[in-house]
Length: 260
Length: 311
Image (cartoon, rainbow over all chains, first blue to last red; front, side, top):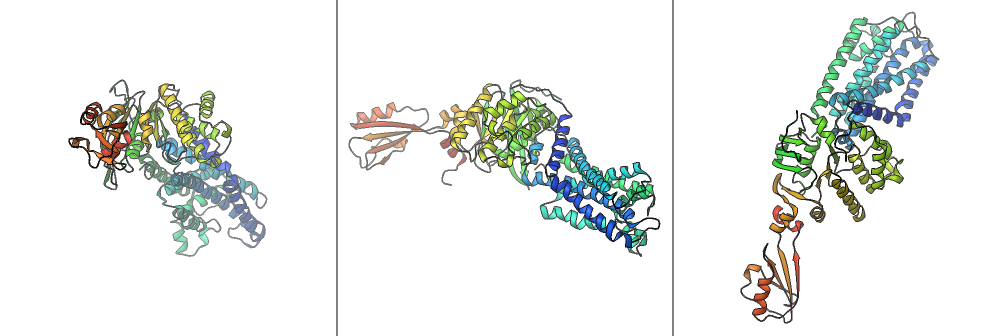
């Protein structure tokens, strides 16, 4: 046995990142194809069928309005699903101990899970956008801001997925996060309608929905019109992402529910 | 920061304690393992062995006390100490998504070590995994998964291999093969810390043993010295003529008659030979047809020390 094989400090991170990417690629029917098909159905319903009969924003077709929301919804759902299911399965099946005994540090752990999840979310978002070109031509007012918002959204939900996976006791609890928290917040956050058309108090309540800022900021960057300013949308989203990152880092650094 | 304790200590455990929900499961355990030795940590279920091992490996947080591996603290210098350790967990832990080959390469990477194909092939060859290299884990049998666990723990060439019940539920042939391989890598310089319920194997494998019970270390000694010190020998005397009662003057040997008085059983205290008692019996006119002696092993000592006899 050699006493000290040469140690590459970056290798544990790269390996874990690669493993996380391979994990979702290996089950790509479930992790990539299914969300793309779901989003395509939304695009078909709102772009090709109902779209012509609905007008919610002057100067834009309904398809142009709804596509940015569907793209960001794909990013959000898939980023969350990736970190939450991967980490929870590791905890549930006991595979997490394989990582806990290695020199993978908490920052490497968080960043590997986060980047792999962001890649999946952004990949789904990109494919949804490509398919959407059949139904709507988007003006792409500020493409860099749109990409930045998608990156923030994916980062934010990767952290939320990690946190949910750590706190969840079983699959039921985990599915509650997506079914009873993310889904209503996405649907009520302005994916399908501008919140400015809502009567009070619903319009005011919508400003308390953190997902509204992600959806509105992304759409604003694409079509040039939003319910709130860039500064507020980006500021709130970035702030929430930062809080969730430190929360996840604290949990993982402490080994909360990971180490007995 | 490196702490120079003793040049030859692979592992030093001091005043190790751990409680779960205020119930203490490890209570102030102290022991050290010398580099190159095979050390057995034994004890009944719930004795605290796995918790101790999991604290060494980093799976369980320390309650209090300290663990030093090769001079480095396993909390402050965890990135170094974890590289020095290879762990075979009691439960089978595998990632069903990947093939044997992929998983082994991945594990080397987790430890910050680049894949060494020659070493990887040697491991899979020695552990009989070669025909299964491209199978996904899900398709491996229980025995193959156990072998994979050992290959995985050795892929980064650790200096200390921790085996927590590696042969639990494994057939005799595989058990023998695994222990032969463990001996081989020990001879090449890897220190071994193992737990097993097969005490005969521990007796054959371990240079030293520590016995835990109720979270405490109740014995820590060279295996053979412990057996010599605590073992009893049973002397079985087959007689020519049956006895109705044991002969007088043998009370210190706890005499028992069996086989309708034709077999006299005597317990010889540790360190006492059979000569004096045999001489005494023959001088009293007893005719002895045959003599058998049987020495208690680690298992009987373990039962005696842990008080497991009688349930």
